[in-house]
Image (cartoon, rainbow, N blue to C red; front, side, top):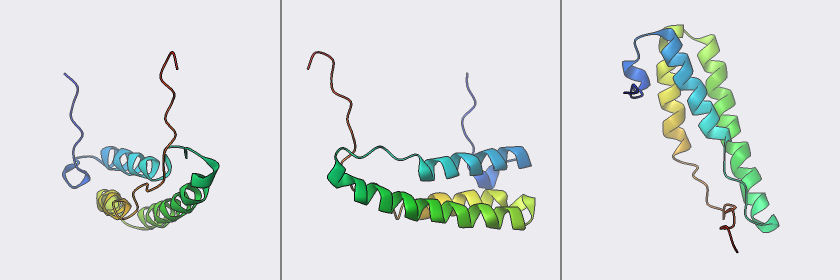
Length: 97
Protein backbone atom coordinates (compact mmCIF):
# COMPACT_ATOMS: atom_id res chain seq x y z
CA UNK A 1 0.00 0.00 0.00
CA UNK A 2 1.40 3.42 -0.98
CA UNK A 3 1.93 6.02 1.71
CA UNK A 4 -0.50 8.90 1.63
CA UNK A 5 0.90 12.40 1.27
CA UNK A 6 1.13 14.24 4.57
CA UNK A 7 0.28 17.93 4.81
CA UNK A 8 3.46 19.97 5.09
CA UNK A 9 2.63 21.03 8.65
CA UNK A 10 2.74 17.36 9.71
CA UNK A 11 5.93 16.47 7.80
CA UNK A 12 8.54 14.87 9.96
CA UNK A 13 11.66 15.51 7.88
CA UNK A 14 13.17 18.44 5.99
CA UNK A 15 13.29 16.24 2.87
CA UNK A 16 9.54 15.62 3.06
CA UNK A 17 8.88 19.33 3.49
CA UNK A 18 11.16 20.17 0.56
CA UNK A 19 9.42 17.59 -1.63
CA UNK A 20 6.06 19.10 -0.70
CA UNK A 21 7.32 22.56 -1.65
CA UNK A 22 8.64 21.28 -4.99
CA UNK A 23 5.32 19.56 -5.74
CA UNK A 24 3.48 22.79 -4.94
CA UNK A 25 5.78 24.84 -7.20
CA UNK A 26 5.16 22.32 -9.98
CA UNK A 27 1.40 22.61 -9.39
CA UNK A 28 1.77 26.38 -9.77
CA UNK A 29 3.37 26.24 -13.21
CA UNK A 30 2.04 22.98 -14.70
CA UNK A 31 -1.17 24.37 -16.21
CA UNK A 32 -3.27 22.75 -18.93
CA UNK A 33 -2.55 24.09 -22.40
CA UNK A 34 -5.07 26.56 -23.83
CA UNK A 35 -7.68 25.20 -26.24
CA UNK A 36 -7.36 27.99 -28.79
CA UNK A 37 -5.16 30.90 -29.72
CA UNK A 38 -7.83 33.11 -28.16
CA UNK A 39 -7.33 31.35 -24.82
CA UNK A 40 -3.56 31.81 -24.94
CA UNK A 41 -3.54 35.31 -23.46
CA UNK A 42 -5.46 34.18 -20.36
CA UNK A 43 -3.18 31.13 -20.06
CA UNK A 44 -0.01 33.24 -20.20
CA UNK A 45 -1.39 35.80 -17.76
CA UNK A 46 -2.32 33.07 -15.28
CA UNK A 47 1.00 31.30 -15.72
CA UNK A 48 2.83 34.57 -15.08
CA UNK A 49 0.85 35.26 -11.88
CA UNK A 50 1.29 31.72 -10.53
CA UNK A 51 4.99 31.58 -11.44
CA UNK A 52 5.53 34.92 -9.67
CA UNK A 53 3.92 33.52 -6.51
CA UNK A 54 6.08 30.39 -6.73
CA UNK A 55 9.22 32.50 -7.18
CA UNK A 56 8.49 34.63 -4.11
CA UNK A 57 7.73 31.59 -1.96
CA UNK A 58 10.80 29.66 -3.18
CA UNK A 59 13.05 32.63 -2.42
CA UNK A 60 11.51 32.98 1.03
CA UNK A 61 11.93 29.26 1.71
CA UNK A 62 15.63 29.46 0.86
CA UNK A 63 16.13 32.55 3.03
CA UNK A 64 14.32 31.21 6.09
CA UNK A 65 14.86 28.44 8.58
CA UNK A 66 14.60 25.05 6.82
CA UNK A 67 12.13 23.96 9.51
CA UNK A 68 9.65 26.50 8.08
CA UNK A 69 9.61 25.11 4.52
CA UNK A 70 6.35 23.30 5.20
CA UNK A 71 4.68 26.61 5.99
CA UNK A 72 5.91 28.05 2.69
CA UNK A 73 4.42 25.13 0.75
CA UNK A 74 1.10 25.45 2.57
CA UNK A 75 1.04 29.20 1.96
CA UNK A 76 1.73 28.80 -1.75
CA UNK A 77 -0.90 26.08 -2.12
CA UNK A 78 -3.47 28.35 -0.43
CA UNK A 79 -2.55 31.33 -2.64
CA UNK A 80 -2.84 29.22 -5.80
CA UNK A 81 -6.53 28.69 -5.05
CA UNK A 82 -6.96 32.40 -5.76
CA UNK A 83 -5.75 31.84 -9.34
CA UNK A 84 -7.53 28.82 -10.88
CA UNK A 85 -7.51 28.29 -14.64
CA UNK A 86 -10.44 30.21 -16.15
CA UNK A 87 -9.63 29.67 -19.83
CA UNK A 88 -10.73 26.74 -21.98
CA UNK A 89 -8.16 23.97 -21.73
CA UNK A 90 -7.11 21.79 -24.65
CA UNK A 91 -8.89 18.43 -24.72
CA UNK A 92 -7.30 15.59 -26.63
CA UNK A 93 -9.77 14.38 -29.27
CA UNK A 94 -11.39 11.03 -28.61
CA UNK A 95 -10.19 8.10 -30.72
CA UNK A 96 -12.22 7.64 -33.91
CA UNK A 97 -13.28 11.26 -34.23
